[in-house]
Length: 226
Image (tube, rainbow, N blue to C red; front, top):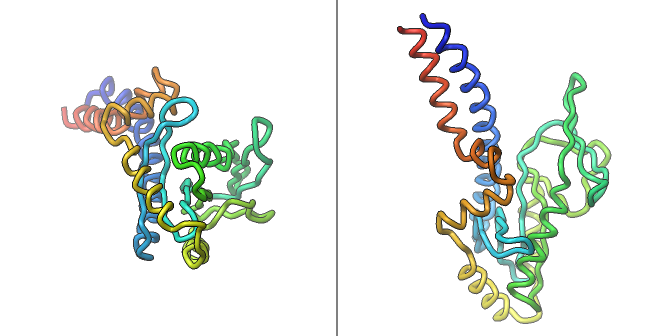
């Protein structure tokens, strides 16, 4: 048993595992939203990358209804959430039993930027959006406007799909234009990730979380069996 290999291996495994679990949790939340919408038969685009105000921006889901194009930002949170408002002085507080808490950026601000980006590409077309909570988080003080729990998403989209926009043909044209603007090549994905993470070490850690976890596990097992 080689302790010199096992200790750094354990550190890599724990650290990489935390990053990887966070990514997988987010992916699971997005998948649950996507499956809900596909089950309704509504047109949907997932993981859309389009030009934004400060470069490329990534949108979790775009949905086409009869009354508007809907922009959805999915968050897979747990615990109790408290809304302190929008903008730099706002944000959400996430609290857990035992007193632990995190300060989160308000995803309504993030989705507002996404809605503006979509509206710039398809001007004159109704565009709206919501933040969808796919996890088991709760708002003890009431759910903020613009936020939907996953169980309420289907009802809301059904309401919107029963209405009609000013010109259904223009909505379909806008939908096609957004599909054309979606940049799915690997270079665009990397560039968008650099913008989100700030580049440098943060970008490297986020993109290499699976490798860190695997390398840590290999060192631990190697140290154990050697």
